[in-house]
Length: 228
Image 1 (cartoon, rainbow, N blue to C red):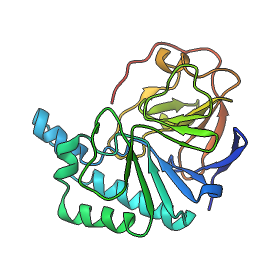
Image 2 (cartoon, helix red, strand yellow):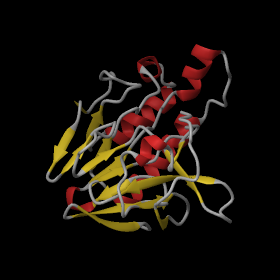
Image 3 (cartoon, rainbow, N blue to C red):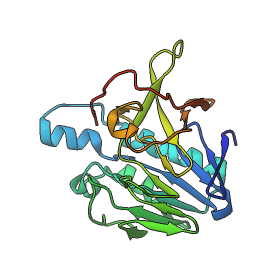
Image 4 (cartoon, rainbow, N blue to C red):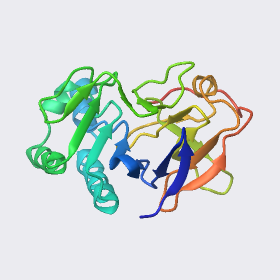
């Protein structure tokens, strides 16, 4: 399984090219912001039609990561569904696929701002979860240590890379995961909201076929707006 090993708070986490993290010592795959059902929610609320394949694409990516890692448990760091109605209204084939991934595995749903309550699906539901030295929540908190979160959908571009890529941001105290779901927008990694959370030294892992580790820019190139 390809990826980059990252020492963090005495543990070793492997950043995968998909945006997931694999914590081998806990047999755990960690993902954030799947936003399953986004196209359905967008059509329902805005009347804007998107190709209705993002849930299937996201679940196929998740299945591939589970096959590659062999992880026996999954932790979803919030906004797993675009809203509760999207969770209840999953296409039958997609719901069956998700249930097949859950079956036989420990499954943890951390609450997000899009999905504040438990969906009618198997698994354990948490406002936040602490495992050993690490705490998992959807939105980062100032002053936290050993924290993993999502929410912001960070993205970063490099000269010659052909645009931006979703990225994992981390310093000595926290990690902020990229959005795992298809059709998710993003926030520039140098936006003020992320600058306020990420200290120095810090790094970014750009997603892709081969994840790329780069220093987190010490200075913001400009202000960014949240788009997700």
